[in-house]
Length: 248
Image (cartoon, rainbow, N blue to C red):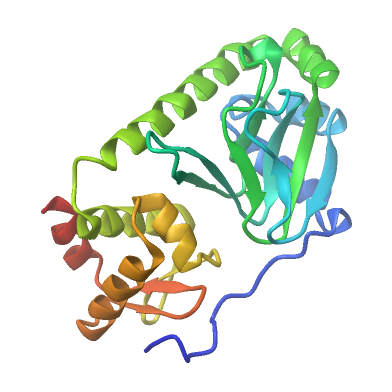
């Protein structure tokens, strides 16, 4: 165990050409606003978007920019962040295949409320205002689903920021690792590997702590064999123990 171990992560390619029609349709079928559509309708949605690749660390958009695009993750992972009450960056969500990001005036947002960055090489399905307007007219049920999904995201982001002031760093970090295990975790022979290259800075931004504090806590948990961790990877070995820590 420890930071000297070779990372067990393998990253996807950002090449849009690797984002095949089957991959795109599968991602759209998982997206909240399109999940209820039949196969022919999903094909119609796919025909009205374009696939765009972003390399690891590349910004997708910035908070405060005009809301001009809606995205669905097809492959890879992205992260969302916004400023907390004290002006500190808070990483609010990690997004994987089927998750959406972005906003449009037609869906109630004039500007992006958060910043988005490619956490790994990522292929995104991009919809502009014209495409979304056409889709909402052709598939009216998607309009309500999209509004509900956006409302949930805003509420979840606010709740996440508020929770940062009501628990200890250990509790917040344990709870965050459990959430990530459910979101991007992949079981293996040793535990649950988080399939995203999260740095100490990323985890610190998610729990409102310093990277040094996060590093010390992870080291302590490694010694207790609750997890394995390297420079940009984490494998949870004892979900039950982390759940106890998160519960205080």
